[in-house]
Amino acid sequence: MRTPDNPRGLRDLPFRVPEVTRAQKDRARRIAKALEERYPDAYCELDFTTPHELLNATILSAQATDVGVNKATPGLFKAFPTPEDYVAATPAEIEKYVKSIGLYRNKAKAIHAAMTRLVEEYDGQVPQTMDELLTLRGVARKTASVVLGNAYGINDGFVVDTHIERVSKRFGLAPEDATVPMVERYLIALFPRDQWCILSHRIIFHGRQVCKARGGLCAEDDICRRFCSNAKADAAAAKKSKGKRARRDSNAEPLASEASALSS
Image (cartoon, one colour):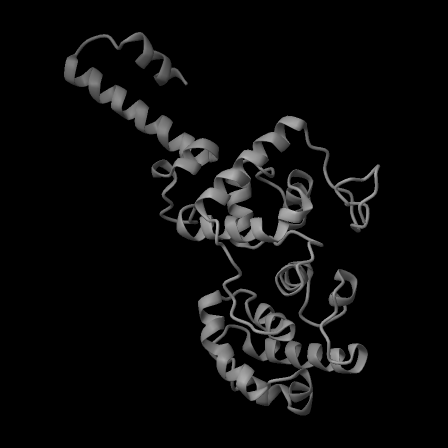
């Protein structure tokens, strides 16, 4: 809830967010702007048409790729169009449609249990609050934030997947040793609430396309060169290597600017 003394509406969160400086927020704003310009149409890459479909797709996406989930869900959603259809089935029957996804047995059980609770406690409707969503089997803050943000336009958390965790740490938005819950808290502290959902998609797009875990394009990308610690390290190493080659070729003393770069 937004109040005059709490303009960003963070008082309803179940935890305290870290203190951040104005300079840190200004830098975060520049990062958000750069990502908006690069990925203006970023979106949730899980296919869905209803809130309960998104909920089930997100449960399936744990330790799996969106591409893999999207290959499995058309058959799943066709076989079980409503939450009541899942309840009428058994976890074993659900398994048949998700066998291509890792941990499919546990995920089938989670989907069956979650849909059962939806029918029994919420009249088959996916809840629109974080606390209620967290009562469903297979749902933690990440899943709940995905559902709230993309099905209902509610920003009640900041999604942190492997891409967001990696980019956040490389861009200095969170400490290198921060846990996933702490990464979320830093992102919440740095960015306006109405940006949490769309910005999560933009960070994920950048993580998948550029700031990869392996073979990243750090030194080649303008955004990374501006904000990423890896890109700066790569650029410094390249400059140092170039300076060494120049000295070998000329067999002369390095220029003052080269000496400065080598010592940095």
